[in-house]
Amino acid sequence: MQSGRLLTHRQGFSCSGVNSDNSTQTDGITADVTFEAVQSRNNSAFVCGQADQDSAPEIDGVISSGEYDGALSMEITNAGGGTVKAKTQGGYLYLAADIITDTTDNRTFSGFNDEFGVNLGESPVTDTVFLGLGSTNANGRTVGTIDGYFTNFPTAGHDLKALFTSGHRVIEWKIPLSVIPSVISGDTLSIGGATESTDGNSVVYPIGLSWGNNATYGQLLVP
Image 1: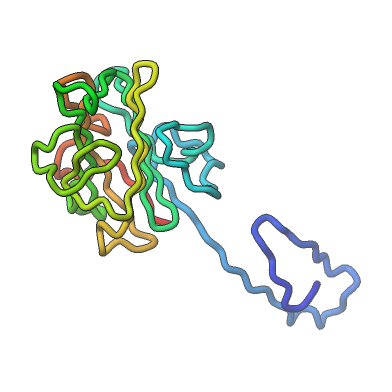
Image 2 (image 1 turned 45 degrees about the horizontal axis):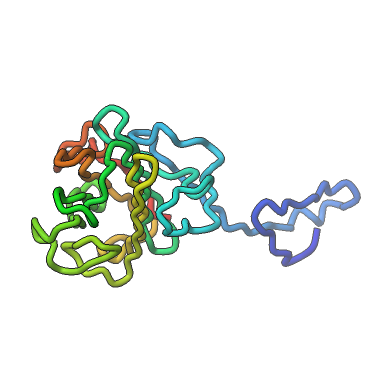
């Protein structure tokens, strides 16, 4: 066994000690070990073994295969309404919303608001921050703009792309975790929100969300 040798992820080593005498009993090993716990509640799509997240999602309005493996998955309330996936990486929260029943891009068609919002808190606290966007500047959305949407928050540090394809509205959103200044590695985020699902109709995610009741929010560990 080599003294001072650094071991990397999944590298492994072999050290049987067959040809060594009792002096080897003074040898030691130092290791940095990281454990990850993923909550099962409101995360029915999680598959063990998908927690390694080597690359951040590309914010292009397309949910590509593998981009959100291991992410928290929250169903939108109405039947067949879609999902909102969430993962944290490198100081950012990444959201991917696939809103199946929203088929009209109101950024180009004047009518409804195409609203989408996320409520964040440092669990067990909820709703510390509400980030809302829509195709009109109603409901306080007078602070900024991003990808054709009006927002109630400054957009510096955010990245967002929305596409309407095959009867879906897909939103990918990169949010700096600094929007909640107290959040640090090892904390758990409470995540929930509402979205326009069909023109003029708003529904919540995850299913069963009750504002202010932490037990009904999605829970996501900050690595």
